Amino acid sequence: MNDDELVIYGSWFEAIGQVISAIGATARVSTEDGETDLKLIAIGEVMQSIGNALIAIGTDDTTEEFGHWIEVGGAATSAVGAAKEINGEESEGVRLEMIGDGFQAVGSHIQGTAVDDERLVVAHDIQTTGALLESVGLSVKLQGKRKVGELLNAIGSWIQASGGWMQATVLTENHSGSNDER
Image (cartoon, rainbow, N blue to C red):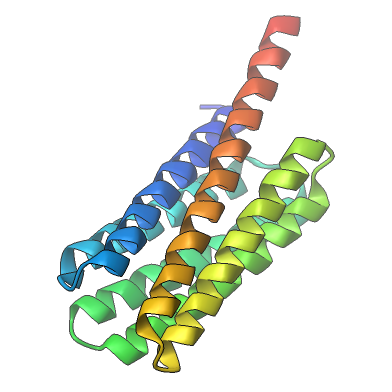
């Protein structure tokens, strides 16, 4: 597998993970049985972490690579947070998810500063905004406003997922275009 393929596969792995997390976050808003929802969030966050690791390994830009490694840590932290919530440690778990989402926002923003393709800049900005809104939502939840916080978190999850899907689509198109030129 060459570096371009690592980046493309990693981007799709990340995007699918973001969608799975968003499904879990959305279900958490409307149900009281949070264990299944939290498992979806944890699985999605692990997929995002793996996807970002593949991208980091495949990229040749140091700044972009650094941003992806930050996202690896952020998504892994969010996954641990969801697992803690499953195990009954809700407050600690929500804090870890909030911190993880914050790191994902920072990592995505750093990546956006390193790319030349305007569509990728926008994709990273969308992901940054979504991850930041997720983090804010969890902060609101910790302040005792559970439903509002969970709603903000779910909206942020879908915003982040739309940016991830855009990123994967653009990278795939760019790769297909470079193959056509060969």
